[in-house]
Length: 198
Image 1: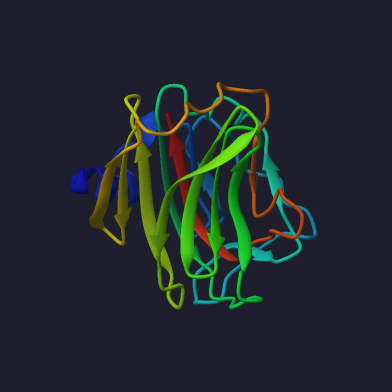
Image 2: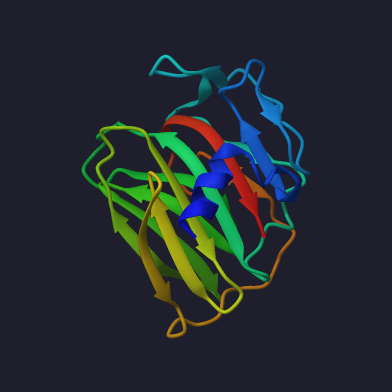
């Protein structure tokens, strides 16, 4: 599993990627099934660490056309490299990835949280305390039998079985939103790379 996490960022699994955005490339590239985003004035290719990135200013978000099939039905892997140094208001609720009515990944202060929706309830199935003072690469993998693996900066951190949680909702027609999606839960920071497959 450690090798798998490293290979995701190395690009070895590119033919399998459903969504594969690299915002550090010039110009940014999309190598998966989902085409590159069309950016408007509220989102820009910027960055704060001498690298280009998709930069969110805390007021911007973007939907990803053609991403509705990225559900939890057949398992899911999310590999992302981000920088989110904003201290915020203490709670610091920042939505990173949202698939409405299905699953989301967000920051809450010094925690990274992965939730899925079961019926009308959002269930916090995994939380990880993190130091957000530096950029991070993390890979979250959920298998069909509901085993969750989490890698942080190339190290395997946790594996947990999620049998005790109610089953997640099935695939909907909703597409993925990056950088927001709930009231005032807007992401402030950079996304360098994002890969999602199921």
